[in-house]
Image (tube, rainbow, N blue to C red; front, side, top):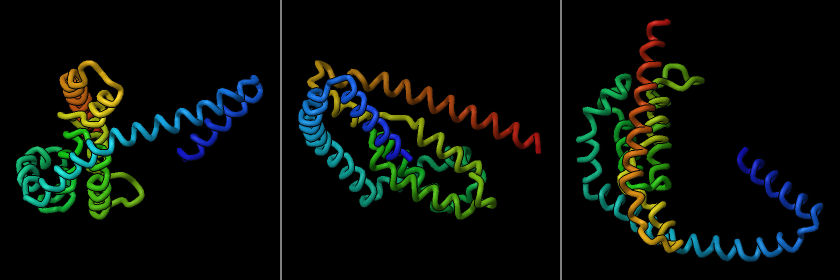
Length: 195
């Protein structure tokens, strides 16, 4: 669906520039933006590779398992319907760890595996379970301690102080996580009363 939206936006932009007589703007944009996109990828790639490697080292060394065990009391409260020994909780903790380091791309595989495991224990296969909804909220609004992608972008565009985003990012993501999980809890409690 997103591909169709992007295609529609590109087509509308090209048609508009043809009708308004700005065809030279399209040519210039294609040539300069392709170069800028490549530069951006080359600037972001080393940082993403570095942090993905650190996450892999943490996984292989058992540090991720220790982090998961640290999170288990909290995860059991957030996901009361998930059995304590279920693989989903391990994948959820891996996803949280990756999101805390600002690595959404590294968090995605763990998130997909967590959703797959949660679907296995879902009694209604055609409807998202409470645990799946809670995980989606936690994944979307997850607390970010080191916003690596934003830092990389700020460095790439020569920000005077790229690190000044860290504290506001922690505050914003903490507030969004607390608000989302609180709303999820309230809706879940009301849902049980209505049944």
